[in-house]
Image (cartoon, rainbow, N blue to C red; front, side):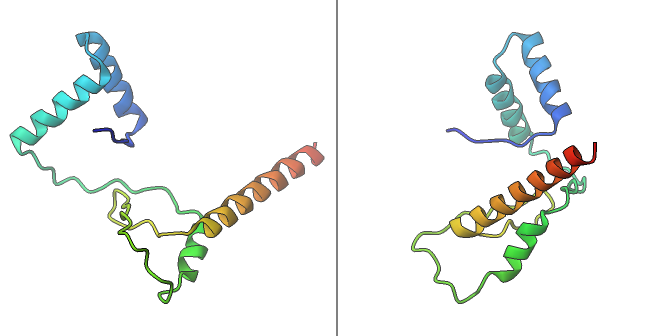
Length: 117
């Protein structure tokens, strides 16, 4: 099965170097470490890391989501951040609008930086 892991840079570097030093592929080492952790039944009481600030555009669109919109015929997986907050479901038009807004903001920043020199 394939999956995507979002790891801190330092954790990834440690995994990569440990795999290289032990002559293993990265996926073999990750699988081995996960299996060991599951077998040990280890749980931690460490608080979840705080994620970065959420984009203003996403917050605005999340606030405009209507509860009267029809729900999809299939269940949509809910993505959760490390702190347990749910990532809002956005349709394609809302995602496109966010991307356009961010592109425009970046264009304006670059243009202002270029004209300020």
